[in-house]
Image 1 (cartoon, rainbow, N blue to C red):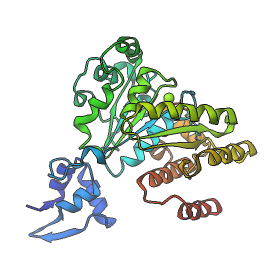
Image 2 (image 1 turned 135 degrees about the vertical axis):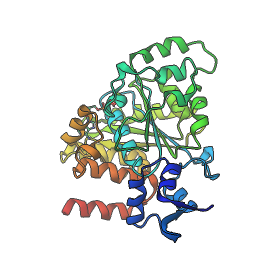
Image 3 (image 1 turned 90 degrees about the vertical axis):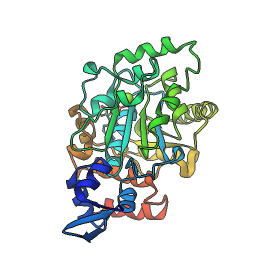
Image 4 (image 1 turned 60 degrees about the vertical axis):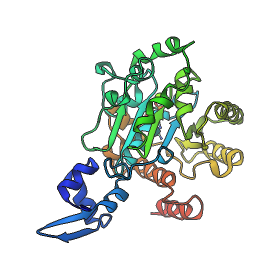
Length: 330
Ligand SMILES: Nc1ncnc2c1ncn2[C@@H]1O[C@H](COP(=O)(O)OP(=O)(O)O)[C@@H](O)[C@H]1O
Ligand SMILES: [Mg+2]
């Protein structure tokens, strides 16, 4: 049967009936009149919620985009950009966020206390626990958002994996069984080139390097290039490595460093920059994505623009430029 009631569609796609109704109202899911209840078509459901399991149209492993956030420098915005991007992408499709930092900042960004977790990235990497046992849903309003958390126990992974067989590809192997369910897997790295980071990078199809533009320097660019070369050597699936300008403001320093990044990376630099916004910091401290904490803040708008750029909904270039100039003048 190719027609589903709203309740059936919700159960299949793993979202609430309210979400189905919302997508019918906004026109994304065409409504079909059949019998005495409105229904939706299976292929439409699949299109709107790409990770819907059990439809016989599961994603191929190549369709799963694994995005690692890396930079050996701390405080540049890896965890905040990873958490906020994951939250926005999860408004439309299943997303799995994986915390690979023993500090557990990504875990905390979703309001989860790392210390109470029984199953974390540690158990997946070191004990090879099946990944589904470690997946939790951290935020009730975001039913598509999934998390594998981390806490200080993960700090033991580095020494314990040293000398282990295929110690750098544990994560790559671990996520294989769930790739058909998640169009996006987002990984947060610790601020070091450790075995944990190597695991995250090896599993990634794309790497985003957040750069704090206010404190960036030419020396930073060459260090970044060097790191990228090293990263390319160890990542079999890697397609793109893209810097993201974070904490931008109106200072000349921020403008200069953005120009430097543009000169060094060309169109690989994300057109979207994330502005320096207090609500981004406050939201992280409150354990919520900024899109839920301050839905209309510029910080939320910037992460929405970033998500659009990543999904390819807004092509890099003129259209983004127009959209952004409108945003600035309004
Ligand atoms: N665009 C931004 N505007 C304001 N504060 C930010 C922004 N990006 C990150 N922060 C804050 O900067 C601090 C460091 O960011 P974080 O994401 O934890 O960095 P990292 O994971 O690279 O160490 C956090 O307090 C975070 O909330
Ligand atoms: Mg971090």
